Image 1 (cartoon, one colour):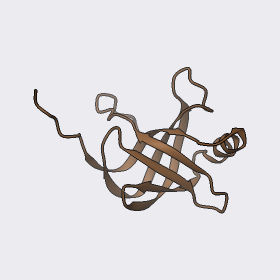
Image 2 (cartoon, one colour):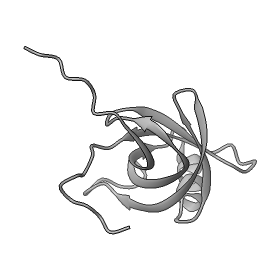
Image 3 (cartoon, rainbow, N blue to C red):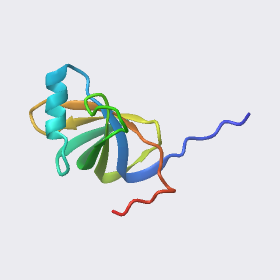
Image 4 (cartoon, one colour):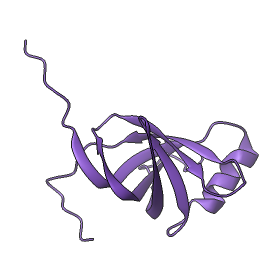
Length: 113
C-alpha cells in the first residue's frame, strides 16, 4: 500500500463546506451576513487572508442551517488541499465565525468564472 501525498495547490479561490457553532441566533446571523460580496477573514493554517464570498448554496438536501457550501475569493493565494479545515471570521464587530472544510477539487467540472 502506498501513501499518497495530499493534492495541495496554491489557490486564490476555495469551495468549502461551512458550519456555524452556536444556537439559532448565531446560525441566522451567519446566513444573513454570508451573501455574495460580503467580506471575511479566512484563517488558513498560520495565514489570515481577506476573503470575499462569491456564492453560497445548500449542500444537496441538507438545510443550510446544518451545512452550506461557500465559494470564496482570497486576496492572495495560499496552499490548501481537500479536507483542510479552516475558519472564516466576519471582518466587522459582529464576532461571527464559521468552521470550514475545503471541498475536493472539481477539475472535471470547470465552472465559468
